[in-house]
Image 1 (cartoon, rainbow, N blue to C red):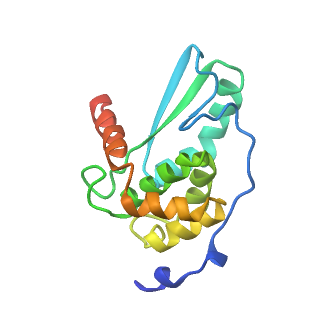
Image 2 (tube, rainbow, N blue to C red):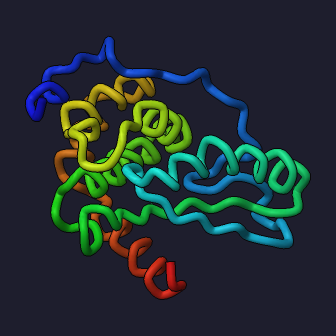
Length: 170
C-alpha cells in the first residue's frame, strides 16, 4: 500500500478541462486595480483548501473577480509538512511544482491538476514522480519544468509566502 502511489502512471492522472479565467497574471486573477484584494493561502494537501478551491473559489471568481470588485492572489502555504518550504515533503514539493508551472505561465492549470488528483494528506499522491506526471498533464515544457523542479528554484519565494501567512495569522 505504501509503494503503490510510486508506480502509478500518467494514465492515472486526471487532467481537468481548461477554464477561462479573468486576467490571469502569475499567481493572481482579475484587475490589478480592483478596489479589493483577496489573498488566499493554500497547501495542496489540505482538505479544506481543496474544498475551497473547487467549491468556493469559483464563486469568488464569478461574483467578485469577473465583475472587477476584487482581485484574487494565491499564496503557497505548505503547512502540512511542517515549518515552511524546507523539508521536501508533499506540501513543499507540490508548491515547488506549482511555481515551476507559473514560470511557464501555467500556474492555474497546474493548480487545477493538483486538486483534481488530490486524495488526502501524506498519501504519496504528491510524490515527485506524480508531480512530474501532473506537470506533463498540464502540458508544461518538461525540460524546463524538470530543471526548475529539481533545483527547487522557488524555495525562497514559497518560504516568503509561508512567512507572510504566519504574519497575517493564517
